[in-house]
Length: 530
Image 1 (cartoon, rainbow, N blue to C red):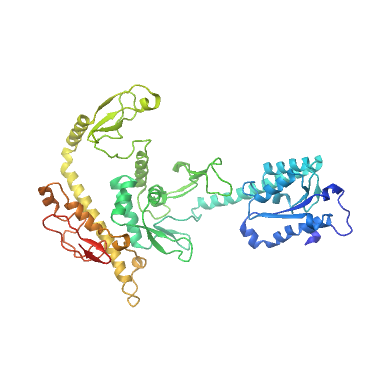
Image 2: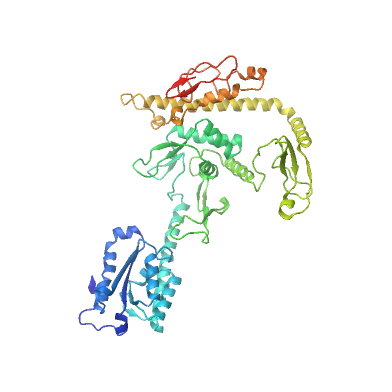
């Protein structure tokens, strides 16, 4: 191995190496781009470590030869994060180095900016550079020209390799065959085909989430609904010893936002929607600095390529609704007694009017305050909210009066569908729990119940009422006797035929109080108590 690098014993010592060079240090720089190369390409590592013997043959003593191997597993595209290269440049700048050895110029740097900076410092402090082809003096014009060409070729080689790999990825993506991590609700078949998750409960949960957004129109309301009814999201483990297992995790806003904005749920295969902003990108972290671009700007768009949970029209409606919910647009429905909060536009200046509350929140006003707050101008206009709200309410009711019966029927059907969906969800949960608690002696359950879940028991969350008990207590709490009597009937989330067991926790529960008096029954440690 050393015969390829070191000169033979009878060879002539390079005339560029002088006595004052040997009086300083000889630094051997060792680098490999990735950890996989360090583990699998050990011959290259041994070849670079052997450069210390070449420095010894050039006349340097063993104690003056320094090996820098801090950058093993680091890319040479930038100086950021390369502590070994920074140390090398610092030592050369202090005048402590007589020669720098590398197996080739690409090991030192693959960026012309870093490479020419090193050449400038070496030329200023009379430091030589050596590789497998020879010894070079950066202060000599011919050697510097050759070193500059080698550095340019090293940088171009990196870009050529990267461009070749990226073009291969794009070509595979245009055929719809590029493998990407699939979101929740989908699985990738060993053949590469994307299919629905075989767990029917997982499919039903995903469809329930989309139905809820069709009804509530905001991510926050959908999340609160799922939390109140203890509905969790199915997630497949992607790594580790439990890879491929189905876990049920509590819902969160980012996962719901990704669910409503990912076009794969509408059956589309999309590639290249995320653009990289180099100003925001951090070195050695390729996933940073990315921003989501518009769907029309995607590199690859293949509709009807995967199974769809929703239609493309519903996906576009969801995206448009989420844009309208942004504060820069109309925004979501605000809290407070003002009916037109966040949607009223000033007729004078065209800016959005704000809602103000006085008298401990009982009196509302609409005021155009933007120019006053930002530029100190006089108040544009202000008016009471009650007369305007009454006018808008009267106009809306007049417009809806011809279709009042149809709207009532649609609302009743919507509530009935919601109750039926919750019944199916809880029945599937308890069917899976009953099968799994029967022990290994029973027959294997169907595929949709082999990986089941059930909500955490109330005792695991502390001493708090069962969800159905909390809902029933809220429904029976009223300000007067007639209202309490009217609300004493079972709520819509309960079955019309009273259930003996709670659909949330499975425990036996007493019948609802006929008097409408709020119940004080709690579930704790596996038993009901007052």
